[in-house]
Length: 353
Image (cartoon, rainbow, N blue to C red):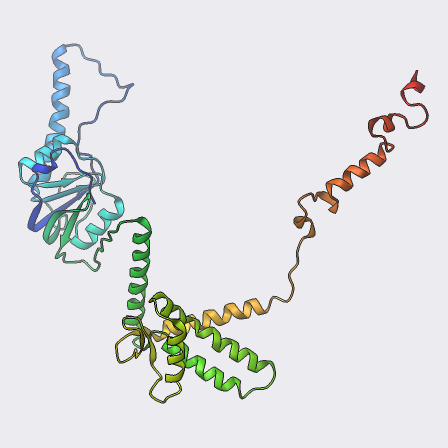
């Protein structure tokens, strides 16, 4: 994304076989500091100083044009003068480009960030891309680089009516990309839609009925917990989870019902493996392992220690309430407050006379 600069409407917005120049150089006239001091003996010398400043900036701009670049990007500001200069010569420029954005452009196009405008005609300085175009997306302008020789990534622009919708979309896309990444590393897959959970639940129920004592309760409890996944899928799809769960239980008793899960498009159940609704086997194994470990950690907690003082809003140091402290203080003062404390040993103040 780029910030709109003065004169950018006159710049060329599209290039084929573009050459990209990435800079870390300011291309604008800067005012002197407040404590800057220039001493001259002749008023004509002041004009020569001003002319020298203009010559420096024009020399920088001329070198940028002579290197053959079509697109000039810089981390630092590109002023109005430079923007108009590039626009008159058919170049595109953008200043104050974020460091991470500029880094991605360099990796994709093969450009090298230059900290000086000297020797930019040597090989390897400019980046290349098949097509460059500035596009308006909503209220923002974006620079789009396509056909980059070294590009290994792509940019996805998410748009929505609210921030909550954008965050939810971003989370969903991120989960999908991570699953695809894991699937590329491990080609083993299992059926989705809660098929694995329902089959494990069926197996544990059968094995649990073969056990005596508490083992049966544990296996049946785990089997019931696994049914939460298809139940939640049915609820999220707007279906009656009771009907879906009963249909899955019945289907998984058959020999051909191994990969049957929730059909989120049509209210019912389906063979998720045949419909290509897959999940990486490694992801599913890790999910089950993490759930079992969390349950084991909770079961290992045999006692909870609670601080009694934190339960009493009037508690203070020593485990005494404020009322107990007041009573103890009053007793120390003779039971009559300040007068009782002053009256100890006889008549108190009168005795001192």
